[in-house]
Structure formats: C-alpha cells, structure tokens
Amino acid sequence: MQLTANIQSYNFDHVLLNAAGVMCQTTAEIDTVLASKHTGSVVTKSATLANRKGNPSPRYYELKNGLGTINSMGLPNEGFDYYMNYVATKATEKPIFFSIGGLSKSENINMLHQLQDSDFAGLIELNLSCPNVPGKPQTAYDFETTEEILTDVFSFFKKPLGVKLPPYFDIVHFDMIASILNKFPLAFVNTINSIGNGLVIDEATDTVVIKPKDGFGGIGGTLVKATALANVRALRQRLNEDIKIIGTGGVTTGRDVYEHILCGADLVEVGSQLAIEGIEVFERLENELREILTEKGYHSLAEVRGQLKVIS
Ligand code: RRO
Image (tube, rainbow, N blue to C red; front, side, top):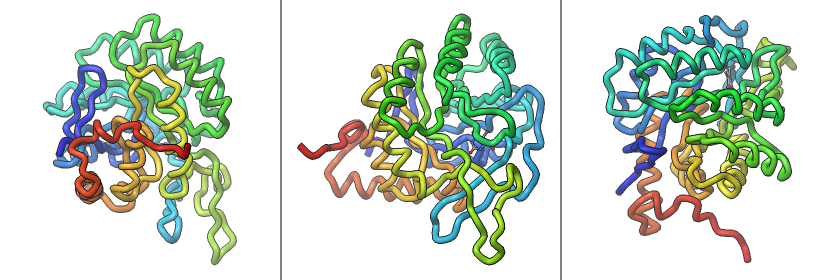
C-alpha cells in the first residue's frame, strides 16, 4: 500500500507529519518526529530571528471529552540560528519543512535571505497566521498585506516555499485568498492554523483556562475538523494544481486523515492529537488509514486524493 506524496521534486514515503508548534521546538523533539517510521517529514517550530520565551503559563489546555485544545504559546522558539544549525548538521533522508514566523515583514525577509543563501535543501513554510502574539494580527486575514509580502518574497526567493494559512469562513474569502495565492509560484499551502481567539471556561471555577490575553487562544483538535476540511476542499478547488495542499486540523483518527485526503490534501499534519497522545499517534493513524483503504479496495492515496463526492 503506497502512502506517498510529493511536492515538486520532494518525495514523502509517508503522508503524516507534525503540525508546526507541536513536538518541534527543540532538536530532541524534531529528532523524535523524524525518527518515527510513520512520518514523512517534520516541520520545525516557527522561528523568529531572536529566541523567544513566549507567553506566560498556563498557555495550553486540553478540553474535556476529547474536544481538542486551546493554546496561546506566543511563538516560543529557540531562534532562527538554532534551526539553521539543526538543518545544516542533520543527516536525514526525509525532506524537512523549515517554518518561519517573523514578527514583521522585514524579519521574514531577513530570514528568507539567509535561507536563500544557505545550503538548506528542504522546504520553507512561511507562517502568516499565528493568532497568539499580543498586538499582532493574523497576517493572512489582511489580503492586501499578504499580496504585498508575497510580491516582495518572490522577487528574490527561489527555493520551494509555502504559506501557513488561518481558517477562512466565507466563500468570497476563499475566492479572494486563492486568487492572490495563484499569482505566485508557491510550492504548497498549509491549511488550517488553529481557529484564533476562542475562549474556554473551567466549569468548577468559572475561570478562563489559559492566562495570556485573558483566556483567548487558538482552538485545535476535534472542534476544528469541519472548518479544516472545508478549507482544504475550497482551496483545492481554487488553487493552481501545482500548488500542493497540506491538510491540518482535527485529525484524531485514520478516518480524519482519509477525509483530509478526499478533500485534496497531499500531506496531513497532526497537532493537538500529537500533543495529547505523543509520537505513537503516527503509527495508530497510519494503521487506521491503511485499514480504511484496504476495506475500500484502494491501492494508493493517489486514487483517493480530491475524490470527495457531492450530491447531484
Ligand atoms: O506559538 C503559538 O502561540 C502559535 C502559533 Br506561532 C501558531 O501559528 N498557531 C498556534 O496555534 N499557536
């Protein structure tokens, strides 16, 4: 059974990887994801030029009944040079996604120049959707700024680059973001980041469950699956076919992975459930996915990708 995918000349032997932010801040964590026999790749924690401690704790919480998670980590990371040093010294067959999440356009351009001039031979993910840095909006909700940034980036950047998008909730917004993204030679888009600025309340104490921003934070896991599938599907229907899609959001079972692929995902990322279950999640999800494919008589993911049916 082939569970493979490709983005440009990069081949992935497995369809699953972590979502940026989960199990990828330190070299030990990145190594753990890479070493799994059931991952196709790893994405590193979104980097800023300088290292950051992030927001005060508590800043992550698991909702009851497997509903998902809320986080307001605030972009804690070891700094750009740390991840550059990692990819420069790590020998691996798996292509690596290097995620950057600068706090300004110039910070992102600075990091991209350094990546361009380096020997890094993997893929780059530009995070335009962090919901948790106080005072900083989620860039990709501002269509004009998004186009301006991509215009500047592609004026010099030649390596394979994708963008991490926030969830959209309006058909016209799907049209608008897709028409902008289609102007650029993007290798991929990754959809969705967490649903920004949700609020979760502790039943026993009537108190918010995380400290930053008085409790507002990004929602992930089961609660966001329908939104994630809609974004994967809507973008697959609108983007140039050479822009691949990484589906992220609400994956807790092999069936969820299968549904992302039905909607058109090339690779599928696991965030909340990886945080909850640990590295073993990839083996379970891959086994569950294989079972579904076998039961339905498929021999590869290529037969499933984008084949969602609608009611005529
Ligand atoms: O670090 C975070 O708070 C964070 C980031 Br950068 C992001 O892109 N998405 C998210 O849910 N949390």
